[in-house]
Image 1: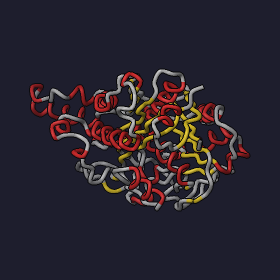
Image 2: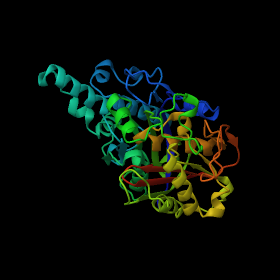
Image 3: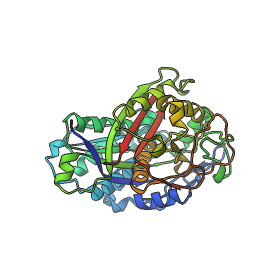
Image 4: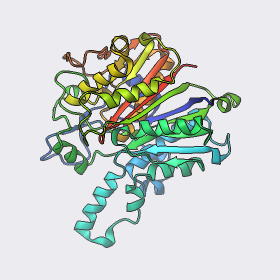
Length: 409
């Protein structure tokens, strides 16, 4: 059986425009949530978001590319470029054996919104010729593939907030079963635009807190909705023997993947946590022997009342209740906000780094215990402890559940 390892990481998000900065801010307990700066907030009940700060796309793209690309694509290109440099994968194999699964939950919402306003105010002739190529969901996957000469499998997997977890999982399967030798896998999102924020407000998903420190508070009893985040993350996955032969740095091994659907409701999770629990159990089914006290779980943990309670049930179902209470759990959305289609890849990056550094990142902003969320969720302060295994869980609108398992070699 082929083995799959992680050899490169890249990320841009509200707590850092590269992996080391984001990781250091995360384990220091910092968050990136503040008042939205992108548009006039008059009439908006939710006014906070986790926007990127001082992001410069010209580090990764020339000026003409930036002008004709959606922000979500710029983020994807940045994360993939970082992962490529970290891994050194480009040029090391036949391009037909190199693939790219890069996902988004919403895609070019900023482009669609801006061009629609232009259509209404100035007429059809003023709509940009780049509208379609920027609003299509596969724009990031296609652009990353072009930049890195990925001629193997290339897909955008759109499963809402589970999108980039599924991208990583399906990329892992491609390598495991011999369809590729290496894959760029990740996700990107840039949906902090008026229609995106208003839509989530009106479906009662967003926190309307005015306090940045008490807005994204996963597993806290006073949680009242998620905070929108943005950014991108990318992992380079590679067949183990290929990575070893070229002397690549190997972070860890991908050892399991679960994918299920609740088939229950378009937004609400299954109240018993069955689908999420089954995804966890599937991922664990191929994991080597593990001690629950040496396992880190990066929970989906959105800070919505229903998600966090039901995810707690899912973790107990997937691991078994006795083992669940021994796990090290946290939700890094307390720091980054909810990055939608980019959340899973970002949290996978943090899970890999948790293993590398033997540090459990904290759940930032936690104050009030909730008896329905009674696992060890690592409140506010990172914890140094020996870790051997890490799982990253994503649960998306539509009932989509995904879980990736990593282990040290």
